[in-house]
Image (tube, rainbow, N blue to C red; front, top):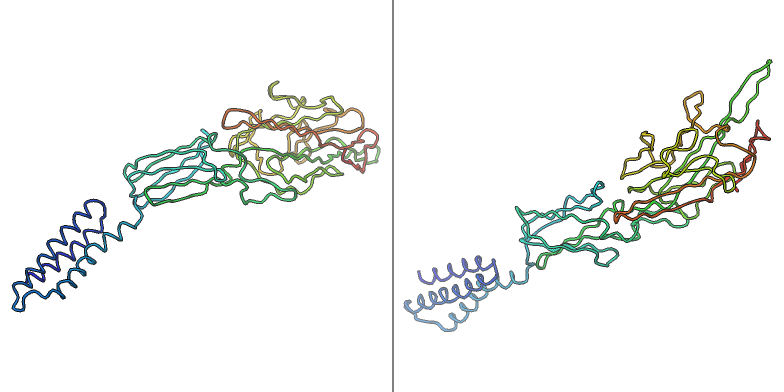
Length: 366
């Protein structure tokens, strides 16, 4: 009976020793003393007495059963199980937020940009959860997505990575590159003629009356350019979720013939295009209209055609034939509070609407 009790104590002690730590070591030592003592006493009281060879083998087996689980637990990761969840962008406060959930007591969180540590914080988990909130200004070093000469791949150039550790356990999560592409660096403009048809004395004439102006902004291939005919190269660019303002003015030479700076207030339709304010995914013109800026979008104008499309009529902006430049000013409001201003003033076309009212119009790039 004592022999059976000894083995039972050793097995139970082996299971308890899985908890590791100092208490696990105490369990192992106690089990070895009680278990081996019970085995020895059992053999002493038997008719054959103590068999020292069998006793030595039993002692070795007892050590393996009791100390083995403890030894295994010493090599298992310490810190409990946990994971990273609820990773999102708080656009209104320019912050990245994420949660750590699991059985760990406390965790250390680090965010790196291309392997360089930019932020760190340690927290204890409450109800198996801890929320971290990180100002973008502390970790942002540049757009995660960037364009090459011919394309704008969605493989991040700069990787923003969250690493959370507790003891020997580590979990990582990549911050969505869309969250970390914050700066608008490029724009494009294209124009299309608008004509009116009139009949007088049984003669019908079709003449130029104005232009529709379209714009886009975000990240574009570095080889993008405006083309003869008022067009633009195919721009499979990237729309940026950020805080920025777009302004478009038309110039002939050094003279602004249509438009004004946003610092002068919101212009009337006859004075200029309304500037557009973008906050995250929401874009609004200064006159209060909602604008979809994900791709090409038409700028409003003081004139309207028969199907309701607004356009810029010649009387409002046109003077002499010549090169008209379409200048875009992008004002990025960074999460640090600073501004990054990008002025693109290399888009223009030769227009001859005065001498050539009926077309066709070459509108060569200038």
